[in-house]
Length: 376
Ligand SMILES: Nc1ncnc2c1ncn2[C@@H]1O[C@H](COP(=O)(O)OP(=O)(O)OP(=O)(O)O)[C@@H](O)[C@H]1O
Ligand SMILES: [Mg+2]
Image (cartoon, rainbow, N blue to C red; front, side, top):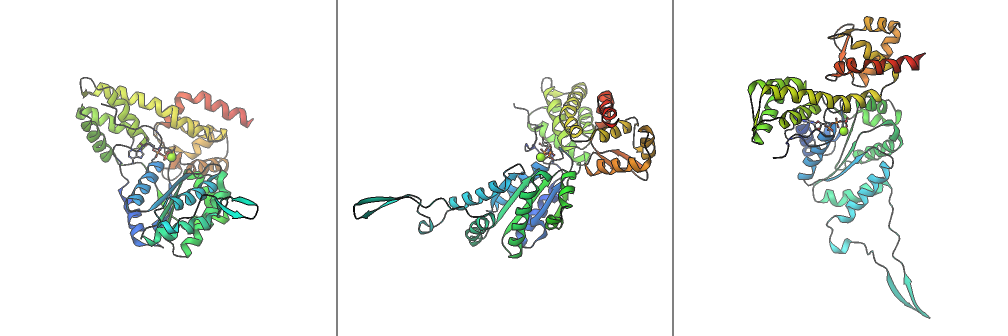
């Protein structure tokens, strides 16, 4: 029996926990027709919270309703790929034979011999033209077009601007379109601050958060049972608690705990060993990626926070960094925007990613050193 858990970026989980409301909003938006707010949405949330998975589910919903979908990631060449996908989608639509364009060359008789007339060069409509051309037959059969763009980032801002402007036109013209973009909170924050992207500011914001532990427990239990393995109640409790409700950790814990089943049963010792393995993986994937995308001072701030067992006083963090409150505030805000820490009451902050505190304690020397070196 293959391991039923999916601790891989973008992999569809065996049970999609806690996203019913987001999917339902989107279903309604498709039904409600042009102008429905959910047809322009922005999915955001911390690394590993399940943005890519949600985009894939939205695409699936649109497809089963007969919509045409174009799914892209914001990497160089984004605009051109969306355009080409639209052209290709149009060409592969089931149009009546008479509507198909002739694509082969032909020969005409001429005084002095035959001359080959080459086929017209492949047309290269602009993005707006390509989308409009695709939309006409699609709308005629009562459906629409969904474009999803994952991992939006400031680096691709020029392409995103043009795509947003094109969609703005299409929305104004009441075309049957939907645009959903997804990105990390700090990336989305950057984009929304761009004047030309005000259109996106009006988008429906879906902020994905950690999922309830009760739902995690049910998901772990049904997934494990479905693979013909038993888990004791105590072991299930250990596994559930260890996920902290963080979707990626649900898959990591599930995966490593499941592997340790002995004779088709997961006992509490096996669960504890699986949790420990999952924590190590979490560190080498999510924590390292998160920390690498931060500045050295950001990291020093986190190391200063990690000295506490619970929420940290911002005044204590400032003191540990030997800086004033104003300086501290700059980094506090940056880290909140990045989704790494969260406010935890007046004058308090806490980690927003499970086990980051423990990871930083284990690796403090490395990250603290970097912070000092760059600062002095
Ligand atoms: N709602 C969910 N329930 C259970 N597992 C989930 C859920 N959402 C995501 N996962 C699992 O979590 C992991 C991360 O999901 P995904 O790649 O979609 O996150 P992401 O937010 O796109 O991360 P990144 O910011 O790195 O792109 C995957 O292993 C996926 O199977
Ligand atoms: Mg993703």
